[in-house]
Image (cartoon, rainbow, N blue to C red):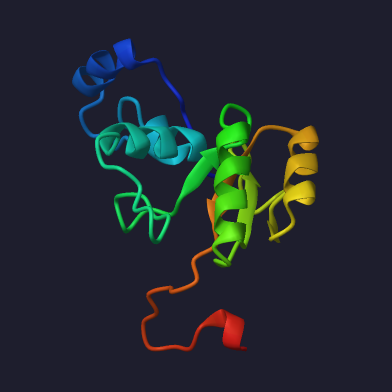
Length: 144
């Protein structure tokens, strides 16, 4: 059985000195990379000076999917969704809770009403569905 030990940041130096042979699979503030809404917030913050491309409605960086925290950015998401709709762009989104794992409570939809209702079951992020994935030696799953 595998055990996960979570310890306060101030205990790190003590742990490292008292048990130098113990491997730690954690690092300070790792949640900014492992929690969906915090990762999106960090990316938005890092690229806040880069404007959205008005022709493609894409944000920087190109490797990060357009993502909205539906708890704090619902009006911005609805506006963005409607602009994509007006420009006849694909509007398929993956809606997932930012505090769960293993694809629990995750939906793929292009229905704005459904997306708004999904918020009732807990905090969610909306990530633009990747329509041009990078694939390595296999066809796209959507083509199966």
